[in-house]
Amino acid sequence: MDAGAWAAGPDLVYRRLATAAVDATVEAVGAVAGDLSGRMVLDAGAATGAVTQALRARGATVVAVDVSAPMVAMAPALRVVGDAERLPLRDGAAAAVVAGLLLSHVGNPVRVLRELARVTATHGTVTVTAFPTEPALAGRHPVKETVDGVLAAAGYRAPAWYTAFKTEGEPRVGTPERLAALASRAGLHSIRVEWCPVPLAGLDGTALAAWRLGMPPVASWLSTVEARRRVDIALRAATALAAVAADPPPLPLLVATGHRR
Image (cartoon, rainbow, N blue to C red):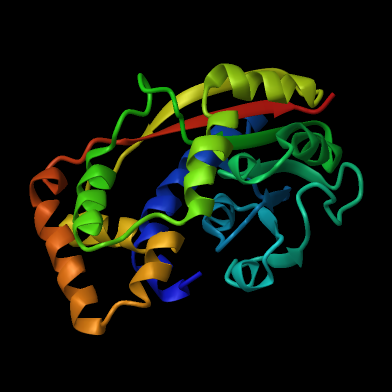
């Protein structure tokens, strides 16, 4: 992953997605005034640490776990390299666990949820998020649609792994019913799944374009493109998004919370 491209674009949006996940965790935990001080919280599938930062802002002591050593190295916390199906933590180690957009990337979401529950203290909270795939909830976001059009005109084609992820990985967890059923099969109780509209207000056309252009499959392709052409693509995308940026619709997110028995 291009860390520079991520920091310049996607990170601005993923921090907002992380805040939504942490807000749900705070509510489920019942933290007084939203304060997680004195609680150890696991950021599972931490990637570059957006959830970690949101948790630390609430006072939590955070352990960030990700299977990718280069990615988790960016997380500002105690960092652990580990597989979400075999977390290197003892039973009940964490007061709460947050897994932002992790389940769509794994082959067995139930097994991962059981592992998240295992490392959560009794009655502790497990929070997971996913992008909705139902047309009624998700639709085609105008930022993605607009930038995809610019990229297609420039010759970009999504790699096979990304197409499989969008058609197989995300749909496995992309509805409230599927998320709730997976959490139930994993043994969690008091499960709550909510649709959360994450605001994009305040991001101009350049920032919104950088979000999409900095996503791993696109950033990887752009790295092979001549520098002046990269600049032209970014300018075209930002210009095309000018009208959308005036009032960008929120990004839909599913947030599920459950408790360990």
